[in-house]
Image (cartoon, rainbow over all chains, first blue to last red; front, side, top):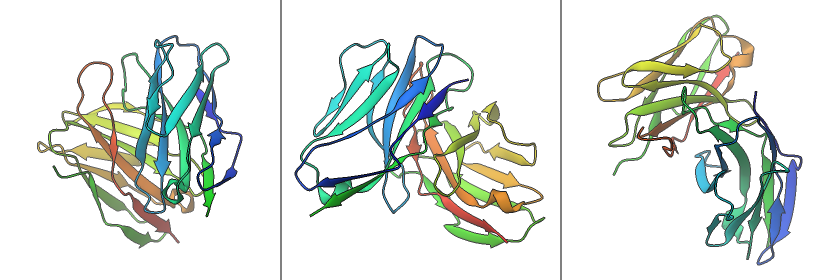
Length: 117
Length: 114
């Protein structure tokens, strides 16, 4: 079974600085998707960025980028120029590409990010 | 375009009771997935409905059941509530096409079991 591990329960960053959130996962599959979701106090889960395992190029969305190391099964999120609105819980998630339930997102326990003004 | 909505926002039940949570999927979406998020944890997959049929289930007992309606809205029913069922219940809708279908989450229903 696939597992997702986030080893940093809490992180803190100064406004305008850069922070990196860590995620490791375990799977025997070769093709899959990885995601970072943001959950603010409003509770609504928002997709930040996704990475297809077959793509070697790291995904980037504006200030958010990932470092995807497939062999090491590592998927970290870098937030550049941190803003107060980035403060939230961040969840790393895995999803298989293969048949069966395509809704089965497997989440880590999350990292609470605080942004200091 | 209307996003995913859930009702109610909060509710309180007592152990042994039954509860029904509702989810309206985003316009154009045909798939709904339900997740349970206990306090301090990441969401856990309960099950998914596609075209009114259950299409995959996580490690949850049969007292967790669901429905999907012709308009693709969905219900999650939990019978014989236990204290450990206290959690945030999230639904996510998507349009199933190909191998990738982005899930859009609702704001969740906070269930407290006393």
